[in-house]
Image (cartoon, rainbow, N blue to C red; front, side, top):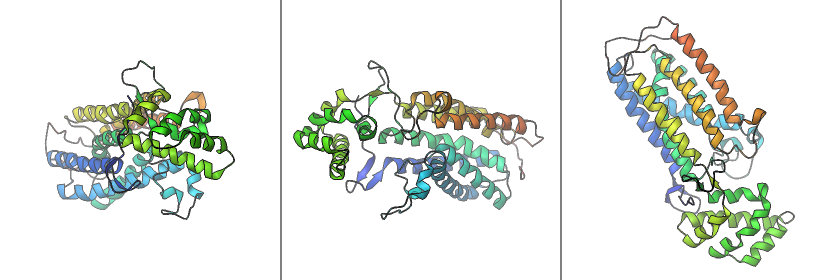
Length: 352
């Protein structure tokens, strides 16, 4: 299967329109709002339905700011001193360069919970729990959007693997990672209205001619765009040249999103101590992320690290240790139990 999905819901120009990635964030926050409203009404733990809307606003800012800063600090600190003449001018704000980091988004959510807990006088652990059970829904939508975008692609899969996907976006990395494969694209260039001879000339001059490099990158972008817009001839021509990959984004959508949500939802049917749901989320997310990274291609500019693990796996190992510690720490506390959604009694959880 050759991936031919467009990242745009509606396209107004070549580079501007409504994107599935942004829409996934909107869906995630909307789903989180309704999930929290449902829980708050049933649990009666000192937070009102009216406060949920304000809390979601805090969470939205925490997710977006933390997610972006997390990517910059954890994966690409060079963006801190990268400036250019075009909007948004500063590399740290250019979300199209690298995107967001889930670990950073979680840190941003923690900060938002602390601030909101102080504002309304409710337990920050309860706020953590509300985010922990609602967050996987947003993760599910986000990973689906990653798949639609053809980003965070999986590692090579066996040719006969039934779920394997070939991503045309791979060709955009060939100039720096697999240069010799560019010549093989001449038949594809022909199917998108380009000249084979001109293409081979640009490839020959790529290393010493800036204009040729611009033409090469422009043509690669055109190929991907035309396949997304339904150019069947280009799709068929490029298929034999691409590497079949694991759809790691869909694995993550199921594991980090749907599976964790179902487990946490079932666990919170009964009363739990504040922080329990959060600690289980941290442990489950870390384990699933560590496992999932074995099917995901690491960031090209980082690659594999100590013991052949990825940056995401090392961050998740640290997360796992923190989650296990918090599970024991919060489990030993004498805090009042929070109602589960299946068993209700009136209780107010103070600050903690």
